[in-house]
Length: 357
Ligand code: NAD
Image (cartoon, rainbow, N blue to C red):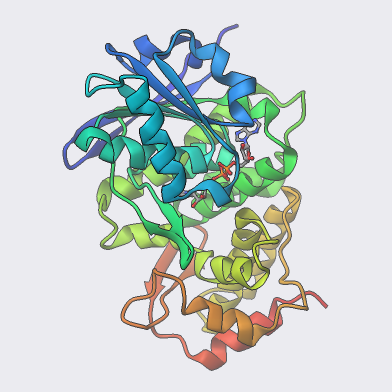
């Protein structure tokens, strides 16, 4: 039986778009995303050979090398060159086919090429589906740090074709699951229950209907948050749950720890800090650890990363306000809040408590 796609409408300050989650979406891109002009496809060297053919005819395809190290202004400049050489004008729609890196780069190009052209996201990694493709943020890395340049660019449609997940490497799927766990902790206890009671590791047998439901439920959390706070002035900060710790752990590891792994450890650290400050029961930390472990994610900070070094790294995160660290803490599953009132001593004690022995 063919499953109908799930449609999640998103409203933003200048309009509205639909996020479709399902299968067979890529082969019906122009109809589903209501694209009438030429398509300028931007993809990467891993995803293009696997999935670009499903889109049918496009006016031009730009393939960037895969990997975070290519999320740069240099890559953007090479894309502008190729779009101009192919005669892409303002009638065109830029389509991003790939993970969060492709989405961020293509979104920035769509925001700036010829002062802006239409943009459609076709995310192919779990992380891009549940997180990066929804909300209208784009970002590029500078030598000084990640995502230091960017623009808000709302897509006109997002097509999350979950059948593409079957070619995603298992460790990338697990990394995306860290964001799914995070979303469940922010506002969906029912979803957290689903993650606590089974592992979602991807296998050839993973059922499409289960994946569709998981992805759609996780996107809904992000959709609701970004709708309320499109320009990241308030509630959107809760999406950084686990990220103040996570980014710092990634940085101290010299980026050997993947983003999703850093977030997983960061979620445990956030729960530990919340319990230490008596906002929640310590048992919540244990439940979060079990849910993350079930998805094949690490939960303890490797002992070789010093608590002090992680603490110092937190200060280079662009999300700190006026030199002050802000943390998203938990009262319970589905009940999180932001605070700037945490002492250095408590952060260091919590980092030590969640290190592996
Ligand atoms: P990624 O784009 O590097 O993808 C991970 C790897 O998986 C890459 O090698 C990619 O080629 C490969 N891949 C993707 N889909 C595949 C598929 N279906 N089959 C086979 N291989 C596939 O990284 P990511 O984890 O998708 O995204 C991380 C990026 O997203 C970071 O740069 C982060 O800053 C950004 N991000 C942006 C936002 C936002 O709101 N704009 C939010 C979260 C993350």
